[in-house]
Image 1 (cartoon, rainbow, N blue to C red):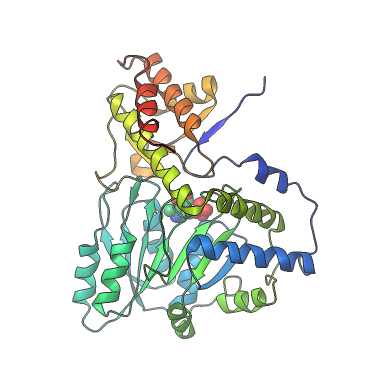
Image 2 (spheres, rainbow, N blue to C red):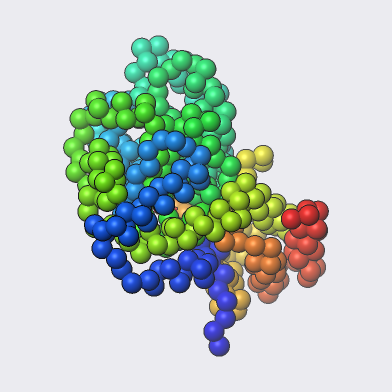
Length: 387
Ligand SMILES: Cc1ncc(COP(=O)(O)O)c(C=O)c1O
């Protein structure tokens, strides 16, 4: 029998039925008036989500492509940038930069720890010649379930007088966690379709400040597909330089409508409450959270695997018996943690169901727990709020 599946990995996320229906709409001419209107609506809606008046560019690509686009458009070989390195995705930025012969000053932390504003401030202060061109970090490091405080970093950078740009990966946080491109002084914000926007993967989106455009004038790295100027020029004509993923734009328009109907700030609040219920349920079951206390993500919770339980067996029971799919640890965290994604289209009873399934699966594997503990903690959290 067909049953409801719970895709609780930290992206791609569950796609709401309203969006699924738009994905089956007949295609339109991507150089015609209907597309012009669609693109305009999407860009206007995206500005509200990024909270920006900056230019918005789009690429038919995954999030990693958009990270690469920022490197090739802004820098030249021999330039220096600062990169946070505390998880797979933050480290990916350094890897891309180095591949293009851009030097990186890495702020290396254990996976699970945040990069603090003081870490960045120290590096910028040491740079008396002001050679550093940019500071790059994720708002949410999906690998380890932690959140960097971008607002404070942006404020510090503004006050420091250092000209470095602030480049933020918001792939697993935009339209989920509070984020203010303009108010926080973020020059380049990068995201992708498959997380907070509740869409299939395949579309990346970037917001670019005037300061970033200025720096791009000096960039000597080669680019064609990723050329921001070419994309901007075409987007001014309400087109893309190449065939766009029109279907994803149908979905994006629907996603923006859904978010607007709920209200962006209500979306943020919902994510915070879903995450709190998840964490409360996890700790009530006697499990421990992996990520640094006080910086735990409201889009993905990382949990230490309890002693004696193997991720493979645990995730197989969850998937096969209950239709709940969770994420494992990546690379050095493989087998050590599991991750529950609670971003995008996630509501109270989803968390109730997922935590119940986790409890039953652990119980079946011999984990000592009084049944009902998980749901009690979830219910106790939700009932605290009028939401
Ligand atoms: C924070 C973050 N940055 C970058 C990426 C890479 O995005 P993609 O897999 O779409 O290339 C991901 C993917 O999960 C991510 O979570």
